[in-house]
Structures are given as structure tokens and as C-alpha cells.
Image 1 (cartoon, rainbow, N blue to C red):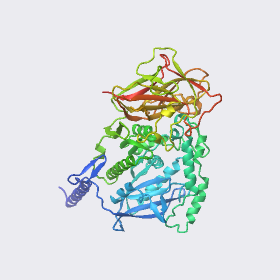
Image 2 (spheres, rainbow, N blue to C red):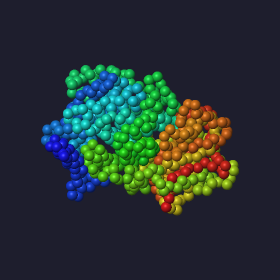
Image 3 (cartoon, one colour):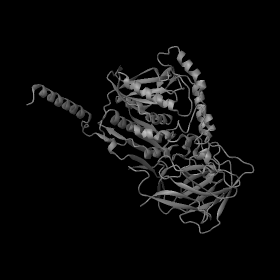
Image 4 (tube, one colour):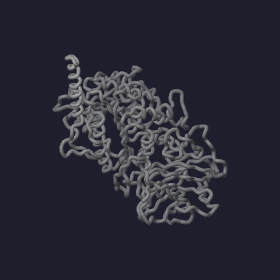
Length: 617
């Protein structure tokens, strides 16, 4: 027989179950009638309750006693700060958390409509000056460091412990801030639920040394920017530093910051210094297994014309976390206002949907959608969206286009060769190229910005000084989605060489649009087994012990991938491959006297080619 005390326990147990059932019901309640949640559209799920924000700032002390400056922007209703706890979103920022304009402090929220949307929907925004920058203390030891990832951990746990935070924390941010998000996730902060990295690197070595070639323009630009920022730009004091004493002391510590230009002293993937291991310890790819084991949800935001389209797919293939990926017709920093407006509209909505789902338990269906959304680009400014759960795409034909002789009569280049689906029957065909050190990708901005499809520069001036291989007029559209792979058989009168390959589309007017590109230093050509899933693409370790000079006048094979693309080469247009050996103003040039002669072999035994991932019908 059940006693009265036992009945009491049973009653309490049922009451607890009902209570949790009600709570669960509240979290998963049906949206309002007519609600919609899909890419770029979101209505009826998340309430826009707040109409303003309040900024405060302070120092937060890290595990090693370094003080980090933080802005905390909390939602308000008619000027009154919300006292009930809300989720918090952190941006670990390296380019000054706030600015001064006309005597007024301008926070990141003040200048970002995207963040204003999040605040109005009930999110606290936290922005820090990264270690060794702005009003924060400490020193910068390299391009990205594990010390900064540990800072991310400390700040997340500090945020979660505050009375105004409901213990749910996310991270967001672009470029440098994206790298730090992923590095921080590798440490598995207990209260970090989701991140939204925008255009972040998988392998920082490939940013600074693509194909083993020093991209000096990146280091020069970043070095100049940080020197101005560290020693000339006005810092925004935290509230407790009324007289600017702490800020002055922090600036003094910044004199010990490592100048990014010094990364040129680390030419191999296994190069290490006394205080930094930039391509191993302080590189996101080295921590991919720990990021994956964190189970933190990741929304990758990427652009086809950015410096990291390969990287985002490497993340997607190697992480087991809950993931989404969007890659659109965008560059690292879009100059065209139409492109920029559309990009940030979509970015704003997707951030809100993502954080609503993971930080507020709003069941809005975002994880029931296909994992990948990608734009297929047609003509400049024209594109359509498509979705998939797999990458590379399942229905792909690897189509070989071989370099051939004859005259395409499409450009007065060094050789004006052809590009054919048929391999040459000739056993001795080759093209000889005297290196022209003035060849260049063109306009200098941020990584790969010259190939934005709007207002793109004509590549013909560069083609005239290069070897080119061009198809006849296409008799049908050719849709290429994925990573092209180039196979070059080359010899050189010099023991090394930089090889640049540009894939271009030639329109009806003869204008040459750069679609994608890749490069490799010949002495770095040794292939190796990748330490991660590299999607069956050629992999080069770029270790010092792997370096192999080109034997004099003996052909060697160079095999490397170009950045992935998603492009329709239109009927009536042409496909062109352009090859040169220098990228003036961008990269370190292997300048030798006398000027080297390069030979490209294109015969039946040494068949140079480009392999394109073509969508099968």
C-alpha cells in the first residue's frame, strides 16, 4: 500500500514534470499566424521589444592579470535599461572598439544597423579592444594568438556571470574577429553556445604565403594600419579611466607589439620563432579537432570574391559541429553600394535567426534547412541562390581542358594558345615564356577584391604580357562550381619560379573578367598527405625540408588548386587560362638576371591542363 508520504513524493514528481512541460511548451510555442523564417526573411518569431541602447565600459581582468577594455551595450525601452537578464554577444575586436566623432563616442552599435537590430530584439552586445590594442593592456605576439583565444574564454565566462546576462553567450565578427571566434571555440568555454564567423581563415599561412609566395602587400597594409592605430589614433577610455591614465599606460605597453611585417621571416609552414609559432600553435587549422569536439554551433558567412572561399569549405568538411554555410557574390570588403546593401540585409537577418535559435531556444526551423546556401553567378551583378547538404556538389564532372597550340585570335598575348577538351597528339609541343616582372592581378585593395564581378577591371592588359590558352566561342553555357585544379609541366633556366594561373571569362566585347586564381612557387611543389579532409585537392605542406629546386632545363610537374568558384560561363563567351610568373606590387618577386625563361609543355606525354568541376546535365 502506498503511504501518504509516498503519495506526496509522487505528486511532487508529477508537478515537476508538468512544470518543465510548461516551460518546454513556452520555448517551442507556435509562431504568430503568417510568421516566416527562411533565408533573408524573418517575421513573427522574434519580438522587437526595445527602442534604444545604453553603453557602459570598463576593464575586465584576464587570468594573467592583463586588463581588457570592454564596451557593454544593453537594450533600453524609452531610455530605461532592461534589468532582466538577456543573452550576450561578444566581438573580440582588433580595430578599436569605439571611435570619437565630433566630440562624441561612437560605439560599434551606433554605426552598425545589423547590431542595432540585435539590440532591439533583446541582445546585449559586448565589444572589446583585443589584447595589445586600443585601451587594452598587453602585447601582440603574432597575427592571431592562443592568448587572445584564452581572453575570449575569460570574457565569455565573465559575461555569463553578470546579473544582466542570462548565461547564454554567442560570438560574432568579421575577418580577424572570425579567426578568434574559431580559436576560442577550440577551448570550449562552458557558456559559449554559438558563433557567427564572417570570412575567417582556416590556414593563416595561405593568407600570407599563398602557394609559398609572400603576399607582401597584406603585411604592409596591416602593419601600416596597426602602427597608426597603436600610436596615433585616439583611444576611447573606459568609464573608470576618467583622466586617461590607464589608456596612456596601455599605449606604452603596445610598443612591445610584434610588427606584422615580421611575419615575412616565417617562409615555411613549420617556421617558428622564439616567442611565436604563427602557422602552427597560433593558426586555426591546428585546432580543428578541438573546435569540432566543442559542439559549439557555427554559422560560416563567406564570399566567392573573398580571400577565404577555400577555407570555409575546409571548415565545413572537417567540423562535426552543428553548422550552416552561406557563400555569396561578395568580397572581403565590398565597394559597390548595391552589393554591400544586399549583403548586410541578409547578414542581419541570418544573425538574428541563428542567435534566436541557439541562445533563445526559438524553434524557427533554421536547422531544418539545407546546410549550405551558395550563389551561382551568371553575368556581372546577376546571380541565383541554390542549396545543398554536401560539398563538393555530388553531380560534378571533372572536365579536362588541355593547353594547345594554334591561334585563338582572341588576344595578342605572348602565344595566344588554345584551350581544348582534346589532348594534343604531338609529342614535342611547348611554349617558351620570358618572365615579365610587370605582370599583375591589377587594382590593390583587400584580398582578391579586384575580382569582384561588379566594375571588375579588364584583365586583357595582363593577358598581353602572359601565356594564354583560350577556348573557341562556347556553343552552350558551362556551369563550373567547385575548385579547379591546374597541372603544369614546366622547366626553367632558373632553379625556381612563381607561377600564377588566372581563370577568366571573355565576354562578347572581348573584355576579360577574372573569375578565380591560384599560385604556387615551383620549389614548394612537393605534394603530401593532408592532416585534415582537403576534399581530394592537391596538398603542399610547405615545410622547409620539402623544398625542391627545379633541375636545370628538366620538366617538373606543378599541381595545385585555384580558389573555388561558382560561375556560369555563358554561351558565346570564351574560357581563358592566363599564366604569368609575377604579381607586381602584391607579392615578393623572384627577380633574377638574366631574366629567366620558362617552358610550358603541352604535348601528349606532358599534357598541361586545367580541370574544371562542371555541373553534369
